[in-house]
Amino acid sequence: MKLTGVGNIVQIEGTCKEVLDKTEWVAIATCGESGPHLVATWGGYMRALKTEDSGILIIPAGYYNITEENLKKNPQVELLIASQKVQGTNTLGQGCCISGKGEVQTSGKYADLAKSKFSWARGALVITIEKINTQL
Image 1 (cartoon, rainbow, N blue to C red):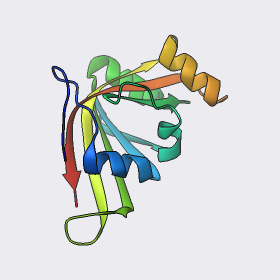
Image 2: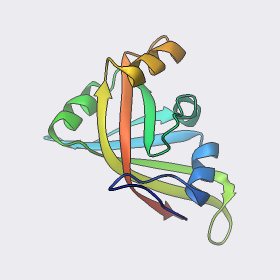
Image 3: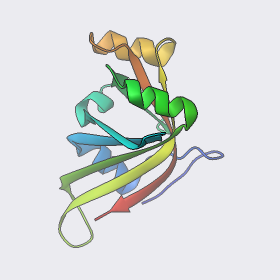
Image 4: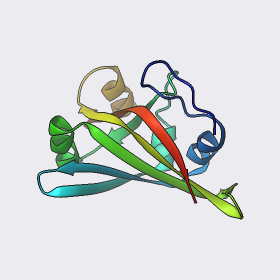
């Protein structure tokens, strides 16, 4: 896995890019006063909102109310993605954990992009990638 970037922003390349391009499902974890909180989205939703900057991931946000509140107090977010269509260490099946800073934006260019592609979206979960680790 090759990681490049400027400052703390990490670009997704190599194996993790392949997993991102093939994942069906994405787990999203934040932490709040009540402890860890998980939500999820479809991989295709995230791929539909690709930007020129591969150091940023955009996910359409429908509800994500607890996620939004958690990120206001602690912007740290982790995503877990995987695909059985990508070669892992020993067999088919590779995963990646993506860590970074996130926020739910209800206005601005990323929110507008999400709303233009998904009528149900109230905005976008915008994640600036800081670290990527392979899993499996």
